[in-house]
Length: 273
Figure 1: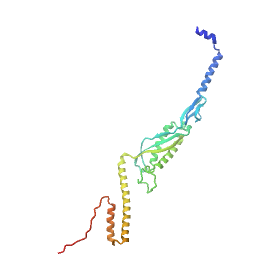
Figure 2 (figure 1 turned 30 degrees about the vertical axis):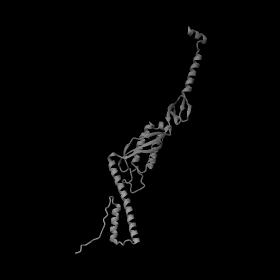
Figure 3 (figure 1 turned 180 degrees about the vertical axis):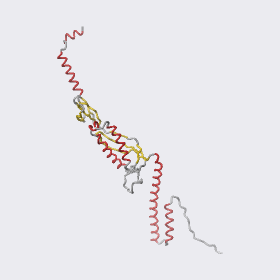
Figure 4 (figure 1 turned 90 degrees about the horizontal axis):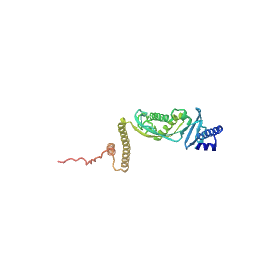
């Protein structure tokens, strides 16, 4: 009964009305399905029937033909902490090294179409670059192979130079994927456990030798000054043998790592009969 009343008021829809209604639905779908919103530092890679059509980087509400396939791609900076790698330095010493890398997508077309997965590509190339970097430098100063060059770059002594070299190599490796290496820093650097104790003892020995060299240089200067003062003031007239004895005693006192015990010479005495 109710359906009959509605049918009497509005009548049966004609074929034209049905087609118009269907067309309006299609137009509404066509308009709203092409709408999307872009956040800051975000993009959409657009393809049309398998062909690259461009990248939309504009912020805010956007619209494109529904026939375009849209793939979202972040342009924000990302961090990559490489796992601690066990590698060999320039002299073949086993060391452990790790790095923190900041990177971002620069060329969206290359990132999407040139490599299968640019995230995996970045991870693998970062590890390869870090291994290659470690093989170019000695771990520390004094390692054999420096050839006496005091300005030789080492992993431990030239952190900034090594970081810049790592960033340059990463940039060269990331370029085919359209990725930019923003920054790179070493986060872990140590000798491998199997040689850590040996290298520690060697570093301690080098420190002791360096300290001894400075002590000897200072002692020689003090002895020279003492002899010069005695000679100028005329306090005592020393021949060559006594100068040698004085120099020997002073060097023993100044360079010894133990407390010295003074010996007072009271001269020789003979008992009279």
